[in-house]
Length: 247
Image (tube, rainbow, N blue to C red; front, side, top):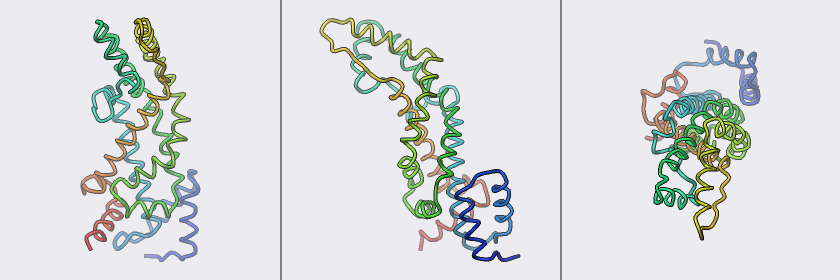
């Protein structure tokens, strides 16, 4: 099998982590085919392996969460009343307006499910920014190292991009109306302190938290479950990690 010149190899590494156009991806695919199938993974393969793991986790997470009851039916990510508004829910149920409280919970989870459809490209775009040094540190880090890195470097950007998506989804499924009705009913009660919550920010943050939970589960699965390593690259890279961690 043909050896790749070391300088050329470094150039390819640089391309892979700083470009994502179709032509580059095609070139990169051809280079990977020339790499040895056995032995230890190269720096390029380790970087690509982490990216592939994150892309798989993100895609699967977004698909699962965007399905009906993806949020509502999963207690790990289900969205409830904001902490500062839990007194609203308790009071509404006490005065016989439990159905209104239920509608709020149902609608905000439906909004998150609807918005999750738009989350995948946002997350995938963020993954492409990862450097080879980041990838190597993640590969030999804790079992949630990739997810924690992802959270650290993308949360602010995701919130900014995700907020308008959530706002549209909240209106689309009626959550804005139900929340307004609940707040109005509560605020009419004598002597209570009026509640004021930015529902879009709250649901956006909870939806993103839910995505990270799903990504973390997928990362753990790929790290710990041989059957979840569905590509040759993942098998080679994470197999290498397994061998080195047992030494």
